[in-house]
Image (cartoon, rainbow, N blue to C red; front, side, top):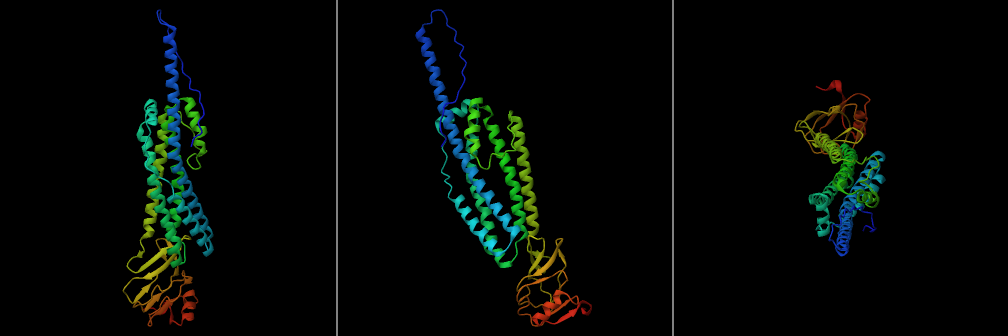
Length: 358
């Protein structure tokens, strides 16, 4: 709640005392002006309070989501099972914080309606913020549910951090920075019609309380056209980043390489073969997929297929468990002295040099 205190609203009176006007009429006029001034002050405080309540919720959820992104970035950089568990628990707690936000239906008071009309501020500006609370909550939870699923299931199953998670988190950080600037200049534009004393009050008692939507690098614009220009600048940049993220993630989200392999690109820009989905009895694992080196084969990747001959390149250094379970006739081909030959020897699988491959 905003602590109410009087602000000086300068009113210049031009009173012409016509002949025949009584002192009593002058007193009545002054009393009416004082009443109108007090009413305007009350309407202003009501407006400031309602705006703060609406904006604070958006600000709080943005701060929580931004913290979640920082947690994920730390995990992606550090890696490790303990770091994964820690990140997962923290993300779950932050999700609860956003879920528990009280987003009751907003009904604009008559005082606020009156004040906005007097200052020429469209009611739609307030209603848009009220709706943003709802959409923000939905979008943040949707993103965080995806992060939780990565941490609790996907990463556990494949044993690596997917590149798609890293791309998403990095882009979301940039998108959030654009969002905070855009929101700040939106507030800038809305309140330019306030009196100087009113705007000063908003800056000191409302804007300064925000944790996320009050960046130090924001420069207050004195003209609506410039504030709008800044909004459009950051909005367009945000949309550009969102499109880039969608495109980059989309290129990696398709788990098939041609018609033979399911795979994942990890956060270190290496490819792991997850599953052989081809129908041929012979295959050659490529050294590169989508410009990323193929360095690992996941557990059971060829299990219970009809594969008989597999060429494994020297780029592959990591082998999961039971890669060829249920493939009694398989022979591994590769370079002499390679990791593939050592793996074949360890698993008791026939090995041939690549020169012997027909």
